[in-house]
Length: 436
Image (cartoon, rainbow, N blue to C red; front, side):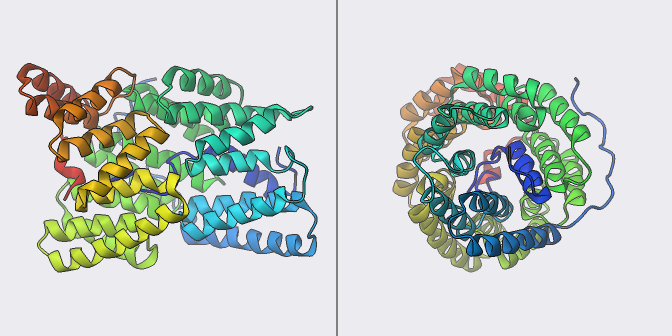
């Protein structure tokens, strides 16, 4: 499976979301070295189900107030923030649609340029509507008396947009500036910048610092930070360390599907397919997201259950097309993973090209290069991979696709060099990890 097959991006201005929801809950207006040792186990925290139930209580309360105050845009902003929090937890289309509906209601009550512009920017960024997000950030900048918090959130979001577009210096400078002033808004995101650009030591150190400064009563953020540490270990082939970190994430917020799907991937990579299948069967039953159907279908194929796989592939394809119809910018980068794995190849190429045009960062370029390679077009694959290699972005998958493109073109020395760079990042790397 591919860990990035979620509707929203891995980071959705997490600090801003946490800050805003914390203020709303209180009733205020929103305004070193790598980790080599086994992390200390944490005490069991609340569950994903209990956190979701708490969010639902706040949604119900705010919805009741909004219904009784039909001309109050501010209460709709509060409601939109909590709905956005729910969408980030569930990744369900209907939750994102509810956020959009509340935003539409709020903006209909205010003059142009006023209203919940920061929330609208965060929401549109989270579903990869980058131009729309920038439109709302411009509104924030044009305010006669902008709030300092809003300005910092806007700076962090602009940096994240730059990262999506492959503008790495702009992203680094922006995230560094905000992290120095308001660490909660950008420090973890700065860590992920370092992870994407090949500095694992710095990424892990910053994430550990962020975890140490995160309140014990913020289990979602703590689980998310531990999840990122687990993903970094997985991406470097340290599967036992990854599993321990992910189990620690589950202890912070037990039962969160986002953590569970990554635990399943570690089991899959360790060839413990029964455990991976058991997790994904439960996720398909309870969470009902297409990425879990894809992962389970791949496992069924790999373990000799093609009929079960085919049924899930058809279900997942229908769901991806539904997402593409409703939220195309958000879904295209993730749905293409389905079509890369299960076909048809023409659909994969269509989505890969659209995704790379929308946000031409390293991850989108790697996906496009892989599609070209699958379709027997190594020259095009190498051209895209070379563009990515000219940036600070680095990953084992980038070097792997560059190596395969060089090999297909007869560039033996270059292929060997890229293969060595791939294994330097992840000695356990296998391109089959994302295809069976």
